[in-house]
Image (cartoon, rainbow, N blue to C red; front, side, top):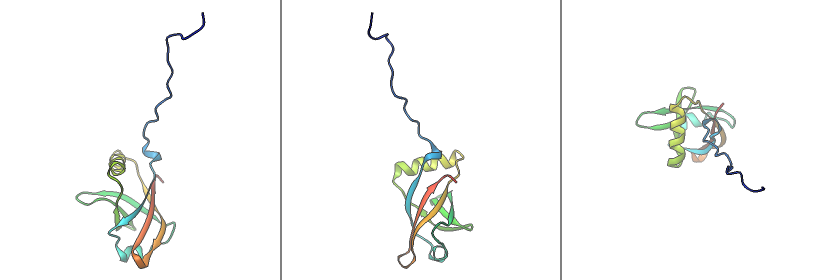
Length: 107
């Protein structure tokens, strides 16, 4: 007899992976004294600061606040709190207008 055997197959559901999370964003409240010394390709540390949120640091000093949509921010915070380390790579700078765009990813 041909036909179904009673079993079914469904595609596996891909689980969220902290290691694959990549965010491109512009720093809000950039610290001009810090970002004016940055260059494309520079690496920033991404950290959580209580009462501030997620920040980007250059050489131990705050360069600006990471601002992303709430769902993505929740994932980023969960991953950092879970032990995943992220860096921010400077991908665009407009010092005149105080704009620093970074790509956040695992190193």
